[in-house]
Image (tube, rainbow, N blue to C red; front, side):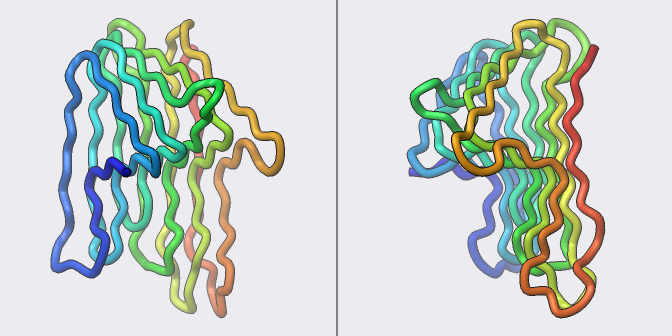
Length: 193
């Protein structure tokens, strides 16, 4: 099972707009993935707003901003978001444009803001922030990923990967490109003081 917010699975006639606002306390369990923004043709604009209580997301993949998308995930003042656990770690991907396109992916996972801090408790095996993996003979779309961890002293992010890359920030790997690999890719992780 998957949870998908702002998904365009095949060729469409227009842009998909989607917004999910969760209550103060919530739980999402998806055995396949949780996706916020992923478009096959015209692109998507998707938002997930986490409430001010405790929200738990259990999934092997949390994708924020897939192909041709604008995606935003925010946490309300005082909220706590839990992703994965010690026994079942998740892959977190923020801004991955893995298709040959001129459309840009722009994704933000933001735990900053005024007032009471937002807290993230995450058990992850891989984190990718800003990745473009396919190009074309024409200038390709960009990929921008931003992860702002905010200022909560309670935030605890553990990334453990026994093999392979655990953290990848800003990756351009155009694959079978015959010409220009495209535009810049940006990955940013920010910690507030």
